[in-house]
Length: 414
Length: 221
Image (tube, rainbow over all chains, first blue to last red; front, side):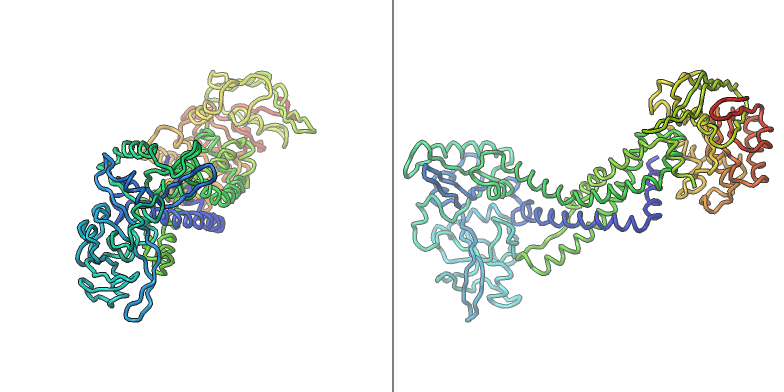
């Protein structure tokens, strides 16, 4: 029966070429936009190099210190991390590092805009960079404040020219001269922890005041032995925060921070650090609501087209009913036809999304981001297409199946 | 085989109430070939639709093959139509997108029968109506008479005990009409299929075992 349904579905699509085109256009456009958005989200949150171990990594990216007269929400300071994050019992490795703010440097009288991140040695254990030249600096380099650096291949080209080896060469940034010890492929700016263009040891930072501050420009990542250790890590961190030493303690004083996955961190940023509800769930709901809102228009369009086809197919409905089709089997048939239509739309959308993403990647609208549609996105896209097909097909199918057989046969009489 | 007792059918709209059938009492025995005649609008097709379970009486009792159908729900009605009834319509009602063989297979799609035996049964039905060579044609590639023969093949492919034909010759010239009547007679005589046929044509009606005449919704003979 399924084969017959599919056969009819394809024939119906071929028969009404204009309607098929309009339907497919709406479906393709919608799904392509959603696939592009999904690919971008996937590029930001999915575990991929150099964050491919991030399925067992949690981070502290923001803290909030609040009191009776207000408060501060900010990236944590080194002092906070040292006191409350260092040495968590279930951590396999812990790394502290700065953000990667934009910097300006001059090299051979050329102005170069770049990003510099200062990290410890553990950073290179937690992130899995593939080195094109040399290797990472070590924790000993960090402790000794050696002026060594890892740069990206793109930075290498800007500093020394195309395909010129950089190992041992030096450059000056922020008034300090660094010697290149490693070169890695460029990392998309969407990778929160992995992105930078230059990495230098943390202790090369000027001054030592930062080592005491509770808020600042630092992040921490904690790699667990497995994801199963996340709850224990979070419990211990929360326990440590109960002993947080406020500058000016009062009953209203509280500190809000968490060990977050990348998605949870994004949710904390978007939903708000002080919101006590399940932020990741709220973000998922928001994203889903946006997607549903976006999908509503083509769905209504498809429902309307399908409804207008009822009369056109009345005779067939009458015949099928007369020969034993129950309402349920007719609903099944028409929903199947709609799913076929949307899955075709999904496949075209996949091709369109691939093309659009390649344009976005090549144009480098988002620095170093290479957006690709992988099996996961294809899977999401097809699921979305099937969902879309079912949603836009069920009501018209139900209306069709409810047609009185006599009226259906009369409506179809030529 | 078919029994109607005091059957009435009323169509109601917001303003008008139309009595389409009034107090119909009819018994059709197994293997009988009955024609229903009467002027346009007298309720012939309505009566056929009631017998075919495509519509329900407003009052009265209908029994088919010994079963009272009044309480049946959609699924039971669908199953009975599928297993026991076959329909032939005046305007053929073939699905234009499907090839002849696929049209004939339609009733078998709603049975637990897989592809090969289904196809074989459809081929046999088409053989029976003399259209074995047209299986891969589309309905629009056939003449009216051929289309009606396909419709008959579709009606008999599931070996129904009752065949309901609503003016099966109405859209055909007399020669083609004769051909269709020959096929119906063959089914009635050789297979014992009970046939109820609505017709305007006296010539064809006289070839059946019995004529039921309706006038203004009432049975007059």
